[in-house]
Image (cartoon, rainbow, N blue to C red; front, side, top):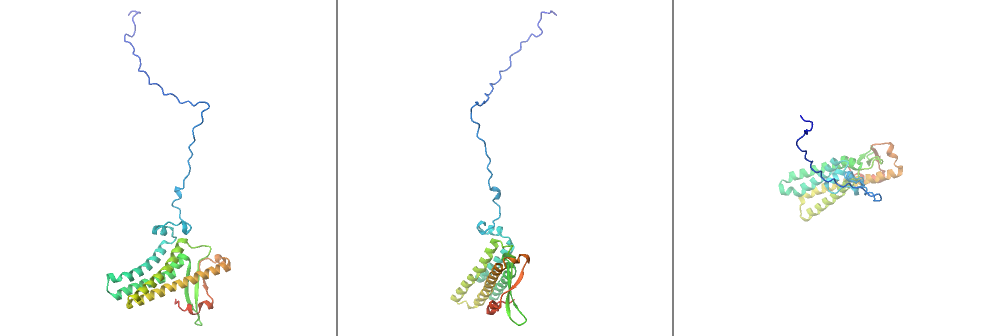
Amino acid sequence: MSSTQPLLTSTIEADDPLPPAAPSRVSAPNAPPPPQVVLTPTNHANTGKLATTPGDAEAGLAGIFRQSAHPIALAVLWLLRVAAVAVYVLCGFFTDNYVLSTVVVVVLLAMDFWNTRNVAGRILVGLRFWNQVDEDGESYWVFESRDPSRPANPVDSRMFWTALYVFPVLWLLLLIVSILKFSISFLPIVVLALVFNITNVIGFTYADRDAKQRWAQQGYGLAGLGGFGGQILSSAVSGTVGRLFGR
């Protein structure tokens, strides 16, 4: 092997040209800095917050029960009242049996009267009443009220008082219609419905007035007692009106 013979006989081709490099973005010394992105918090997470006042309550039936503290008691109150009116108005379209219609309406009215007086009033607005006769044969009212430090839910209170005052008006209108149509056979049912409804109206109205008077006089001193405490009206209030309420 000659020392002058080259080691590599093939030629080496040049590499492919590289793509032009992207020009780097160099800021001028006096260029203003880019604007900063500021993240502003929104209130989307608070859209499901429960309302604390009647004005904050959602509209619609679902919103009312969602805002209610006792939706079952509220639903039973309205269900019994609406059912009694609906059965009375629509019973003639489904059956001609007067006895069956009367029994169903009377049972619904009795259930509504007991539920409103002993369950719904106590749970929804913290009020209850009954009539009691002492050993001397004198009749007087006994009222129970909620501790003023635990106010009622505003939605429950509004719906309870609405049901309490609206349905007697409906039964009064049905009484007028029965008289105009000469439906004498249905008059006893309407009169019984008015007696039950007006009894609850008077009882809870007096109970609410009595509770407010005691809270104002005692300066919410009932908070230390807790629960419910029986309260008795004076004999001047009981009188003749007190005898309308039988326990």
